[in-house]
Image (cartoon, rainbow, N blue to C red; front, side, top):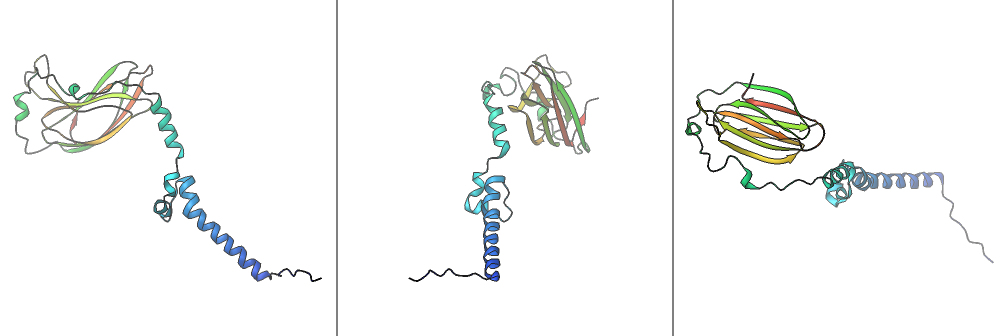
Amino acid sequence: MTANKQPNLTKVQILKSLLIALLIGAVVLVTAVLPAEYGIDPVGTGELFGFSKLYQGNNQTETIDTASSLNFNKIKMEKLGSPQSTPKPNEANNPPPEVQYPYREDSIEVIVPAEKGIEYKFKSLKYGSIKYEWATDIGIVYIDFHGEVKQENPPKNVFYESYTLAYSNNMAGTLTAPFEGKHGWYFRNETNEDIVVTIRLNGQYELFK
């Protein structure tokens, strides 16, 4: 009867095997585990092999939870701007000035009372360029981002041109004023809590005093 001989590994061989195992583990961690579980893709392999698509994270859960509780009316194109019965003032066709308002930057907080609406506007000359950003502290508001033409004797039913209608808690963009006048937002709060909207402006405009 012959006994089975088990191979005897030397310390060098054991150490070598351990190092190889650690190296393989590190490669798997960096290329697959980090992109899929934590959204971290230091070497780009997560995007290359599709592991990054497996990452869900907390933001997706929060977005789904928030969106599932929303039940707003659909916004239609017919709601944009003044009714057709309100003519566009001739002043809208005035040429732009040779000199715009100087560049400035401001941050403004606007409190939108519960179940009410409020407007915030700035003034700009024709073709003035303004970057804007706004965000709420809590909740969603309805917004009508629009402008009103400057008129010497404005009528009772003032013409206004809507740039954006939306329900949102955050928005950013750039406005090139199509005419001289007042431009800004109508915020409507449909919740039972006051909402604070923080507006940031940067560009060629002036604030109303």
